[in-house]
Picture 1 (cartoon, helix red, strand yellow):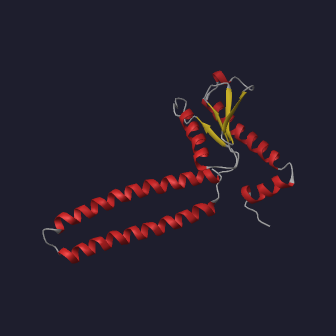
Picture 2 (picture 1 turned 30 degrees about the vertical axis):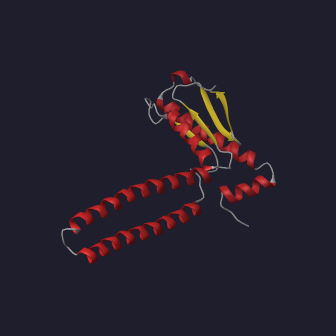
Length: 193
């Protein structure tokens, strides 16, 4: 994915700080418990309770932080996304495509990202994108070769060629005027003036 790394770096710094605070709170709770009760019988009840609560909170925070990073990846992504089969028997392609489409909406991505998908031995390439609140879809038939009987290697080659063609088309469309030049220079090539 093409994303704004500075946004990720800022998020990771914030998450690191929160982890340090979380660790300090857990250590402080353990120290306070030991100061209050010593190594007596109460400690054998309270310490495992503190540890259990800390582990539960750790898993919750970890899940929330991963979700935030994933949302940031989709929110800041520019260019197209390509969803392809991972193997000849892959049965997850459409669900992965639908997940990418949903995450683009949930993250509030404003870069008109298009999600291309093509299944092994299918004759069509699907393209999905958000037009405001409306999900749009187009399809184009694969006219080169014989996709219905292609080999796995031919499919992989097709997907690489599809990506190369669509990326070039994207760049040409974006470079049609100075506003597109400025946007590409800033977001795609990270060039500032």
